[in-house]
Structure formats: structure tokens, C-alpha cells
Image (cartoon, rainbow, N blue to C red; front, side):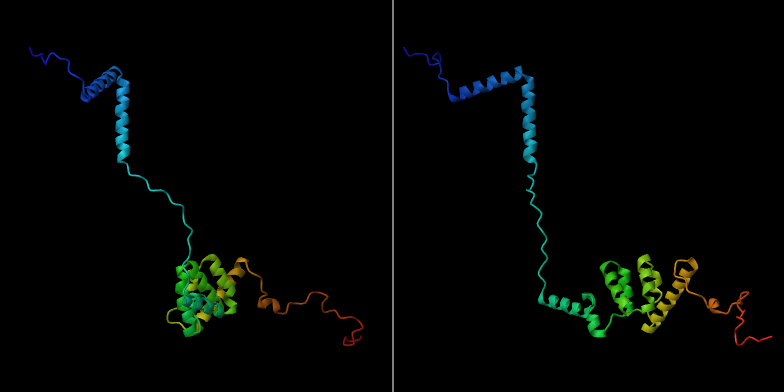
Length: 211
């Protein structure tokens, strides 16, 4: 008689052992809901962190190194230093001998380093009598008053005359406000009436009539 195969005890396989562990873990999660929630949150956070882009490493700031100047630039700088002019005016000075007033006025309006270079050149060509007024204009930033002295159709002599007129007007305004040095007026040089006793001559004066 053949033995009954169904009645024999089946040998457990790897699948049976894995299924048993899964069932035991499931029963443990059902018995401890807090641990189950924590595992779920941990899984969610792990998923979100995995989708975040990886930040690139921050590199240390590099020191700026100016590019090397070409031989032509070095020659221009040396030539401008020899002539005593800014490099921006080198070509104009070499071709015309000096910077025209319209160019200087336009550069003064631009401000910054361009204005500083233009004012330096303007002091070289402006009348000496107008330098104090020019310093006043620069200190108070009265660029509109400076622009009135330089008309597009005016010559260099006309510009000098207008600067001198502006200087005289400024000096007169300083006198009226008391801010400038006092200059004796023409009336102070006139003859004043003599005070009593000024005309008295000594008795031994040979020109005095004798009684």
C-alpha cells in the first residue's frame, strides 16, 4: 500500500520562512501603531530628500587679477605722463595742442573721473584771475554757471572774457555779503575835509606870515 503524500508533512522552504517574517513584522506594526507611523514618515522624508537637487560646493572667492597691458597701452601711458595730461586726452593734445573747451564742458557734465580730468585741464587754460571763481564753482557744484561761459559758437577768447565777467560778478557778490576781502573803494582815496587843528602851522614856519 502506497503512503499518502498529502498526509506527509511538507518541508519548509525559503519562501515559507520569508512569509513568516513578514507576518511577524505585520503583527508587530499592528500592535505598535506609533512605530508604524514613524516608519511611514521616515519613508516620506527619505523620498523627499532623494528628490532634492544636490547643492554645488561653494568655492572660495578668487582674487581679481587685472589683465596685462599691451605694449601700445604702456607707450600711451608713458606719453601722457610725459606731457602731463590724462590718457584720455592724449590724442587730442597731440593733434590740436590742447583740449577744446566744448570737450571739457561735455566731460564735466558726465561726472566721475572724467569730470576730474576735465577740470584739471580747464585750470591749465583758464585765466589766472578766474581760478578762484572756478574753485568756488567746483566746491558748490555750480556747473550751470560754468556752462554759461562756453557757448558752441564762441571762440577761446570769448570764453575767457565770459569767465572773467563771471569772476567779477562773484567778487562783487562776495563784497556785498561780507564774505570776501574788503577792497578800498574809490571814495576812500578822495580828499576829506581837514579836521580842526590840521591846518595849524608851527610858529617857526618860514612860510607863515609874521605880524
